[in-house]
Image 1 (cartoon, helix red, strand yellow):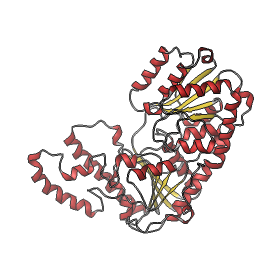
Image 2: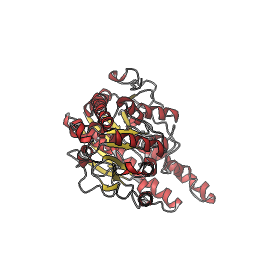
Image 3: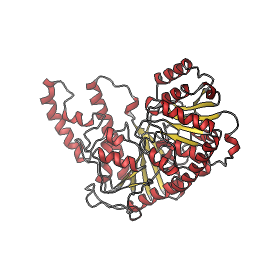
Length: 453
């Protein structure tokens, strides 16, 4: 089977679990004997080259533009330049589909990429499958393509030109547009009708339904991890020695809640402050991080300099060892999470996890029986930290319960097998993107999975 994978970033350039999981799926499919090609952007994420996950053996083509990383020039020039850029990309993608003829196209995160490529597989009679872990479809596409964020549709309307020139411009644009449309490239908002959509959590599927994005064929496949990489046999004695070791892992930006964790530590009674320590393993957004600067200043003001240590940008391959050395992962996020990979990895390593349960994180919390605290509630979080610091047996039991939940619900083998079966079930099914006749593959037709109650 020939599979074309499309993602905005691909290791060694990545931001988080979305891109890492994509690379893992690619290598799994190749190991299963499938012919896999990857098309991604040529953007590089700062600080991820050294020690990052290798690309493996899959052919990776880096020729799409990740527009989100680029400063915007003046609006009119931008519209013309970006329209030409996106047209080149759509035509190149069209040629790839026509020349290579994949059996299925598997979309991953397209945030920042042109959406003009989305209808092209259907124009070639090739089924396509979305793997959805966040809300890029809601924010950059919309229910009917009306939120195309890269001004592609605005260009063809001509509204970017000076008002006096629009009538003359409209005639030239109309001729150009007809030629482009004959190539199968959409120039006006279009309904995105993939053959199937795989959501990483039930929450993420519901979030898209609330935004008006629904598809006749969809399923939930909980994101999994390679348990053999992260599993650690833990002993209760490990949790009783020294300070309670707390961990924050991931992107450092306001919605991830590091400020709430720092505030919670500042609320601890003086006699407990010396019994906890927080390590921050961070991944930063491009450019200066004023939020991180504010956090460090707050740590100084609260007298927590000896309690919090920053580990810097931490490569993913080093995370198993880090989790194994910690007692508790804190997820203070307020985001609409898909299914946080760090929570599952930490649980697999025997760490207790406490969380807001935001978004799909609640599905992990329900499966593992994790303690919850309200979003942005430093006092409630401080109370949980205090209890964990004084009741180490409870912390150990939470970790063991989490390990069992990962084994049952969040393994890499389970996820990869389900996605692979979905792709194989759709491969070779020629159909247009009408969608009304679409049905889920046979193995996906069970009722929607749920972990609660």
